[in-house]
Each structure stands twice: as structure tokens, then as C-alpha cells.
Image 1 (cartoon, rainbow, N blue to C red):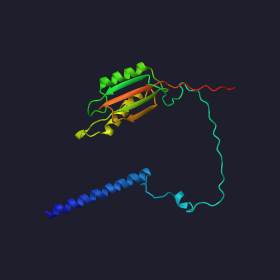
Image 2: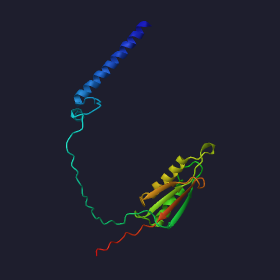
Image 3: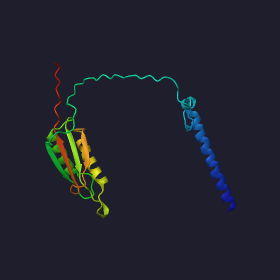
Image 4: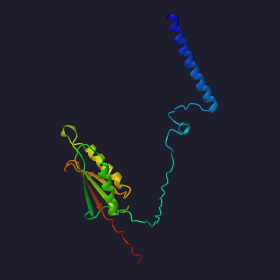
Length: 186
């Protein structure tokens, strides 16, 4: 019994040595060495430890604004009332729309014909979790999932949490693009 135990331990040690030797040979053939972690790089080690003394000169940088013509004007913050208001209702603990609701919502977005110059606001209502305690995390996830659906149409989206709204309610408001100001060159 003792002899079998000693043979198995010796066999295990030989197996480990064999694996280590095999790994070392592969690393040598491929020219790879293990990466050593250092706390600072060589450049940092050669740097002077104190701040340089001397005169600091102030330089003004002048940036030239390039005028690009965009297909759609850049959206500004909403002004006035929304041209479309959608109300979505989520089931108690769900954070995503089911497939049919999502399909209807996307179809309605296509019918609205919105583009990148439109502005969208999403208001998410309270969501109750266990023990009827409000969970803003669930409301945030609901609003983010709705924003992911809207994002291909317009990228200007703001999300608001309104705990006073009804449970599971998400309101999406669409605003018209604001007309760009035309500057007179006179």
C-alpha cells in the first residue's frame, strides 16, 4: 500500500516537471517570454522627481471653426410642446417590451418619419419591486431599452425618472427640430 502511494506521488511530480519543461520549450521556440509587471515604466523612472523650474509662457490657441453643411441641422433643446406623445405600459417586473409591442412601436416610429435633428424625451414612472418598494433601477432599465429602440432614428434622447407617474408607465415625447438661425451677412 505504501509503495503504491509513493509511486503515485512520484508519477505526479514527474508529470508536473514534464509539463513545465514542455511549456518552457514552447515559449523558447516561439520567442515569447512572460510579461513581468512593473509599477512604473522606464521613462517614468528616468524622469526628474521635481517640477521643472523656469518661466512659463502663456500661449493663446486660436481655433478656427469649420463650417460644415449637414444634411439635418443639429438639434437644440426642445422648445414648446411635443408634436407626438406615446405612452407605453410595462408589466410589473418586465424591463423590455414583448415582441408584438416592440414591432408596433418600431412601426409607429417609421410612420413618424423622424431623423437625427428631432429631439426625444423619455419619462419613466415608478416600478415597484419586492415588498412594494420603489425601484428606480427597473425604471431606468425600461427607459434605456426604449431609448435603444429609438436610437437608430434620432440620437438626441434625454431620459427622466418621475416617481410620481403611474407604475410601469413610460412616456415618450417627440419634438420637432428647431430651425437653424440664418445669419445676415450685411
